[in-house]
View (cartoon, rainbow, N blue to C red):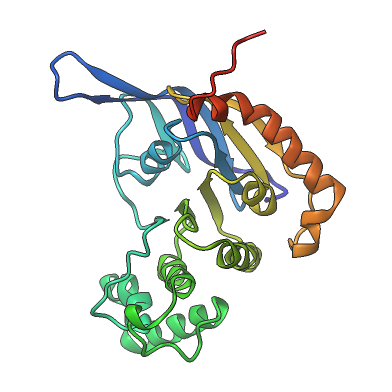
Length: 270
């Protein structure tokens, strides 16, 4: 995180309600959310299913509008999608008729960047995500983990200020997920982008984040924020060290009542 602690995204008293098809009925996904995201930090949104993590991310992206409250990006109201903010979804979202190289170049082409510059930028990013040599492959010819790395490269290519990641590893097997966590931690350190990352995984949250925002069950609110006092670069060996395990245990204790309630094992208050 930046030593200056400059606020880049500000979420101010945001609520989001979704109206049901039944007249007069609605679902409140978020209520009174206040959050500040600093330039260059890796912020994690962690919480049980249905707590509004993805809704909050989509509000930051400009795909949704708050029912009340406001979200600011560098002091300006987020009123819709903006190329300063890009999103990586759980689904790979690559165009199947385009090669890996063409997928990464897509956003640059839309900006009118010359072919020569597009190729140079895409080549550098494919090297960063370790896909050099796969430029001419189509999405069906590469693995799930490689598809997600290509999706990350495509999201970074237009040089956004903020990268919004919505459970990008949720569909991957456990081994690939761990390897991509290490890749994203490295890419974050190299690009110094502001990243907001949604996850259900406590281990993933601790390994990647500078701060972890724990959200309550629906309607989602910011319940706690935990700083992650782990050095960067993040390496696999950290997972077995005491500071890592201690924070994992603390987060598990914080979230256990919500997750037990989510699975039907209701925890009665003391």
